[in-house]
Amino acid sequence: MRYVQITPSTSYGHTKPQGGAPVSTVKTRSSRRASSTESAPPEPPAFSAPSKLARKRPALVALCIALALVGGLVTYFGLSANNQVAVLVAKDGLVRGQEITAANLTSINIASDAGNGAVPIEQTGTVVGQQATVDLPKGSLITTNNVGPNLGIKDGTSVVGVGLTTAQVPSRQLQTGDHVRIIRTPTQGGQIDTKATPVVGVVDSTRADDVKGLIIVDVVVPTDAAAEVVAWSASGNAGLILDPLQNSESGK
Image 1 (spheres, rainbow, N blue to C red):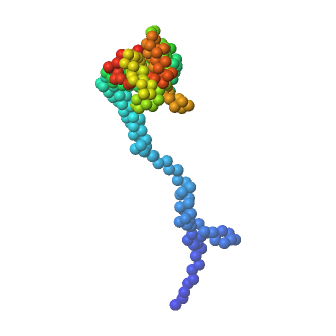
Image 2: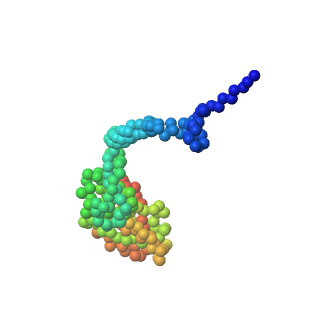
Image 3: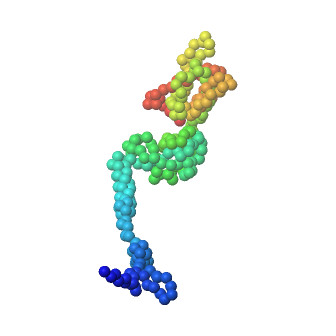
């Protein structure tokens, strides 16, 4: 049997240039992938939907505004329903005799039927320029009784200072406006002078004299009795009785 040798002139995937080595013409899988990637058009950016918070933010703002308006209306109508009014108070405190300016005043809301003589804020002009007739701590109500054109010393009255020991004055702390009677006390071993008429007065202020160990009480008394009270005090024969406001007459 004869065998014939066949020599192919070409081969798959290769070409044989003249005078050179065969060159491969078959593309690999990786080269095809790279080529397709380079030639493919860029994909459009993905659309991102707004978050729930972003969609709700305008609604939250509107809700906050609505709540603020409702709160303001509730406060306004609440004050009206409770019959409250704005009245004047001392902003930083006032001392007795100090002239009042607008900067010394502020306001608070109280019941309109409190009946304490408080001055409404609408009457600020009637208070400015007047004087505090008593010491007014911060936040004290401005009333018709603690401010005035002067220190409250009216014609026909005088202020006297009465020096008293702790045995000659009530142990209760005296306050400005307290109604009192000043009496002549007997000397040691003596008898009370029943002919001496007690002098009715109103406490103006008090202070302690630590040097002499006395309590000095300034009292507004009728002018015609002022000299007598001073004499009692100078001799140590003055005593003071505290009376209920409704049962004594004021010498102020």
